[in-house]
Length: 372
Ligand code: PLP
Image (cartoon, rainbow, N blue to C red):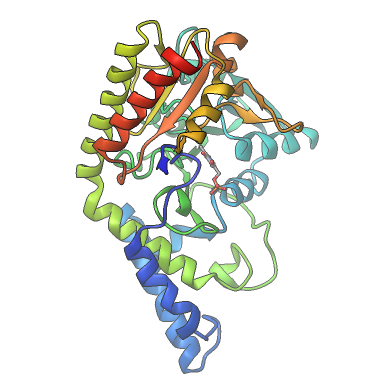
């Protein structure tokens, strides 16, 4: 299988597996117990937190471990303690939009910014213009998971810092594809383990002291009361191992993924000169490309690619089992027909030259023979 759907989830790195799987049979302690095996479990927890904190140059106490980015975003949005006006965008993941909609039902006011014509990210000046005297929170993604287009987080962090507004960043689509810089105005940022060749069911947020929140998950003193519940230690060790691997491989991986992503776009452009690469002239993370094949039904192309052993993604599933046009593309101002003709290819550090060449060749055959 040629897997080009790494923005959905990634294969677990063998090193990560090696570090975490033995714990399922060996590790019997609960990190909260004070006996020997409990202390051993605690040791794994503390070491893992150290690894994560040192990668991001933050304090261990600033790491909030969760079951994934969805939970981290829910805790930080629904648990945010400064009621007021919130600024976000229509391009955000549902893990941001649905908790915000719940706050709206409770009387909070939310401004949903849409990108300017032809762009795939919100501009700092749009955020600046949307700020009101009662604005307390800005929530935006660092990179879009469907297009890879990056938001100018540095400038928005600068604005947020100057106005003393909390700034929560969804960093899921950026980690592992770009160096992460925790600019001064970022008050919290969320990440996911399974998007960086770690295990599923684990994620985390870095929460700085200027982000006031109360926990949604009550039930124990774990994580200083910020998220009750026995820690998922094998997954936490797996997450820390995935971060260790990022540290060792990131620069080479970025160059490689970018080179392969560009080759894919060039190869497809040669066989389909009228295709459109969304955000081609905007800043994008290195692994993602979202391509419109005019006149071709994206869902049909996806199914043919699947039959040929190539996994890509398109739009979002609807309740009847079919595929809907991507909400993100529609909110970027792209028409329904073009959105339905688009596919997302997302690479990983394991993607090979041969896989990219095979993908180009397969699409050439499909466009010129099967779907012609
Ligand atoms: N944010 C973005 C941009 C994502 O792509 C995803 C997952 O697809 C999430 C948040 C949610 O992450 P998780 O799967 O860890 O809950």
